[in-house]
Length: 92
Image (cartoon, rainbow, N blue to C red; front, side):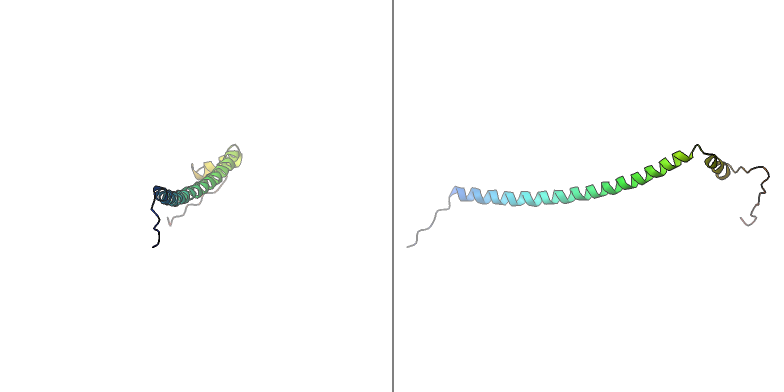
């Protein structure tokens, strides 16, 4: 007759450790994917904020110029220079 090997406690511990290892690797992979998604979203957000910052710095450098003051006076306040003719569109 063939001898049957006993199923000992070390085999059970080894199988449990392997299952835990596989579960941990799978769970960590899912967490890494979520982290990478958040990272790419944050990088896109940083890029858009840098573009806004550059636009604001450009606008900041233009604030003290005469052209900027004239543009604001014309657009926002409706001022005109002396001697300019005003045309009013009656179709509006």
